[in-house]
Length: 357
Image (tube, rainbow, N blue to C red; front, side):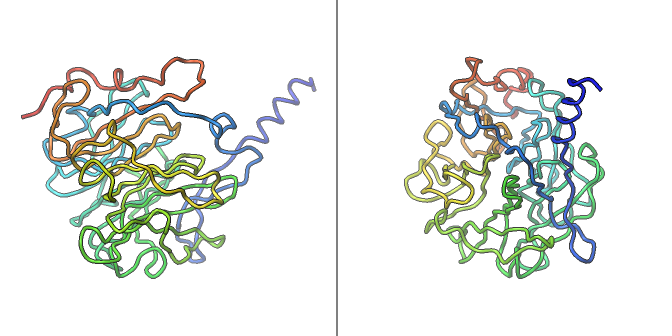
């Protein structure tokens, strides 16, 4: 056997990683399994990266947004599937839009089937890295006013393949209080799966705090606990986490913001450290209106979120509904390319940038 062929086989053998679901003792799936790897999920360059400023947010256009409320985005690992919560059908359901490439336009969103959506309210979708596990919350749920649900599918490209969603256990993740806005983080170097979500611990709009739970080795969930360093006296809700687990974006109404609710950023040195004090993402991303439910792309370059802003975006496009979806991008300093992939200009056809009456 030639030496170069031996090297090729060795590389293939050491880099293939299977992604599948963990199961409880009764055979029911609970979450994605995180495998050990000799190489970290994010490259050394990613870990040491410094980012440029966020660009002015761009409205995703009339194809993705509707004349109703569109919110709570979730972007797939490959950047080709955008899951959203939309009221366009007369009820808040989960929809998905696809595109053929990161420089291609988003296609018309399609409502996920009855395995996911019901007569209740379904909000805040969040997808595992392998695309086979979907988390979201439903109101009402079996444990409290709102509960976190999970669904699985075998084929990550089959939108009709989702199994009937089931609620995560009462008394661990879900409680008698409203539990909502799940964000799954797969910490591959430490072989752990962590779930962040928001719980309304006291009545009223300011009663939401951020909680965390960890998937156990037997496939069950532990008992969720509050994350004190991310909690404020005001409303703290939806989160999104960078793939290396060192940067978190939070939707929060805490003091010091620009609008009724803003997007804030917390960082930490490693996934074993506590989160730092959140810092406002600034007036480029945030407006004087409600800005929330951030979703960070896998490469860390694009931030999707919804906003109730009433003015035009950087392209002069006016909002289409009460809540619209927006995207902002940033460049990694030191990249060979002078700019990050400019999806703000290439993924939204001009025909979709017309204000809808």
